[in-house]
Length: 116
Image 1 (cartoon, rainbow, N blue to C red):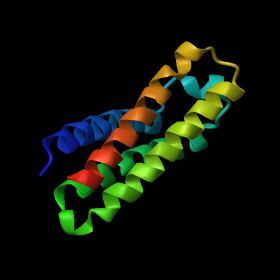
Image 2: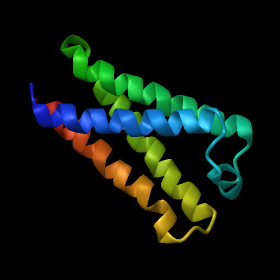
Image 3: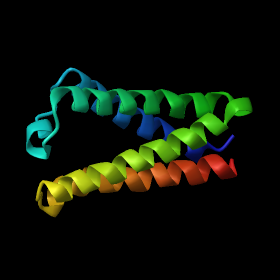
C-alpha cells in the first residue's frame, strides 16, 4: 500500500467533505458572487461530499479501486468547472487559486492511486 496515495487521498477527502458540507448548509458566501441558486450550490456540495466518500472507498477497498479512479475524474471535473465559474464571474486569480490547487491535488491522488 502506497502511503503517499493514502495521505493525498485523505487530504482530498477532507477538503471536499468540508467544502461540500459548507455548500449544503449554505455557509459558502461565494454562491451569490458566482451566480448559483441555493439548490444548484447544494447539488454541487452533495457532489463534493459524495466525491469525498468515493475517495475513501477507493483507498480502503482495493477490489473496487475503480471507484476511487472514477471519483478522481469526477472531482477533477468539478474543480475545472469551479475554475470556469470563477472566470465567468470575473474573479481575479486569487479567488481561483483554491480550485486550481485542488485540481492538482486530485490529479496527484489519481496518479498515486494508479501506481500503488
